[in-house]
Image (cartoon, rainbow, N blue to C red; front, side):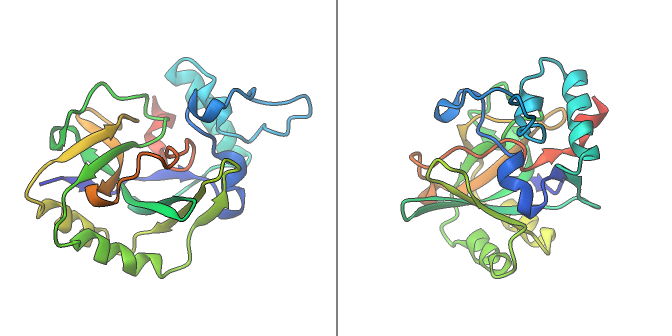
Length: 217
């Protein structure tokens, strides 16, 4: 069993996702500064990653919200998130997951970082069948990150279907890549079926699914 729940996210509008989001620190050789001389990266989430403490991060995130770089979803949602490169793709569900339901879970990154990647066994493809329905809808963003990967996401229309499907799994999830914590005992995750995991694909990007709770820290 893997217990998941929707969460209220701050996320970029579809047309701005490529500008706002950024690779995790140290990933893909990304060493660009948080803004250039002309302020071209002023709305990049990299500004938040450059801060050292929760209060400073909350201040930067609030500025991004005020600039319209990040917008708050009106209610908690789950998301289907696809990373693709070179004909390969990895599709997962972005959700808040109970830490106890993840084997190998270690101290997570701060709440404003990228989701942890968690693999799970689903021999009947019950989650994949549900996700296909949502992927037939218009995505909330789709962009080329400039490193050979494309990133696409969809809103989940009926979260309870996913909650029940994950609760019906016979085993716990397995931590493949650490990521952001959410609240005590919870982790922000992208849950990927083990048979579809591809370690060669890029990391989930920062700034695409930021828990709104970072503003209250």
